[in-house]
Image 1 (spheres, helix red, strand yellow):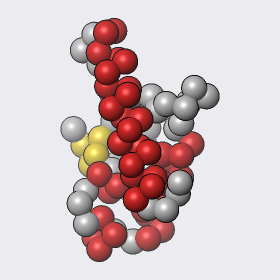
Image 2 (tube, rainbow, N blue to C red; image 1 turned 135 degrees about the horizontal axis):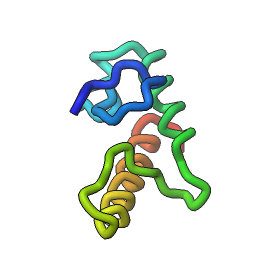
Image 3 (cartoon, rainbow, N blue to C red; image 1 turned 45 degrees about the vertical axis):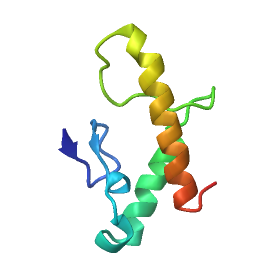
Image 4 (cartoon, one colour; image 1 turned 30 degrees about the horizontal axis):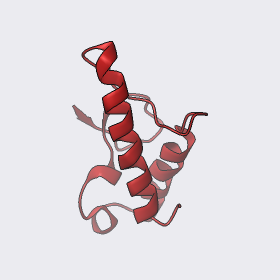
Length: 81
């Protein structure tokens, strides 16, 4: 797993939004760019796609639901909902 400092990189990895205390560690502009990316990744059905290859087709539903809840929590935490 990699750290994704640049929100334009289409790879899988940990973003600043997933690090506790990110507001004190990263510039606001960088956090805003990652929040913009997170908002843009929302699918038409309201969920968020996975950024990694799941181990099986059955696990897609479980992990996608998990990622969707986490994305909504993050957006609410940063005042985007």
